[in-house]
View 1: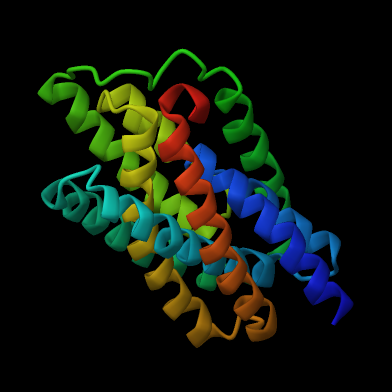
View 2: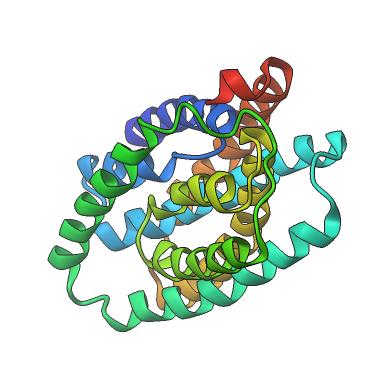
Amino acid sequence: MEELILFGVVNTLIMILSGIAGGGAGLFTAPFLITLGVSPLTAIATSKVTGLGAGVGAGVKYHREKILDLKTQIIFMTIGGVGAIIGSSLLVRFSSNEELIQKILGYVILLIGIPMLFSKNIGLKTKTRSYRTKSLGFLILFTISIVGSAISGVTTAYLLVMMLFFGMTAINAAVAKRSIQLVAQSVSLIIFASAGFIDYKLGLVALITSVLGSYVGAHIAIKKGNKFVI
């Protein structure tokens, strides 16, 4: 019970910050769960619950503000869904290699976290991108969807891709990311649940705190604007 309460408090704070920044919770949630003694597979699966909660909480707020058109969201959601099927299935297939999975998770946090520190000068204004640049962006997004469904923390890279390859502002990129996340995490959870990877007590706490935290964070992000988000 003490661990559930601790996780709930920490996850709420993480999700508020994630809601403000448009993502990044996966870089912290899974490693924190591992420090609590949760296996890497269960930690990754539970982080998908937080992703789903974030997609719902922040998504509701963004939808009310009508920041991104439905057609664009559907395209991104389709990419996320297909990528999630592939990535989650791969994790289930290689689930016996927990030590390797934990090492990969550590490398991913470094590879994704460091570039985010130097993204201060993008995402302030909408910029026009060529068809070729956007096509490359779609390919990268699909790749991230596959890897991100198997390893927690990768989906933070969505934000950089949205801003660099699609010329989106930070807030628009956050909305697009939540659209992908909502579908991708739902698909991943179905696959992980069928494989028995999910701790449902942790999952329930993760879902509740993620919805609340991400909604509050998204509200702050919209109120403060793109410069504050970045």
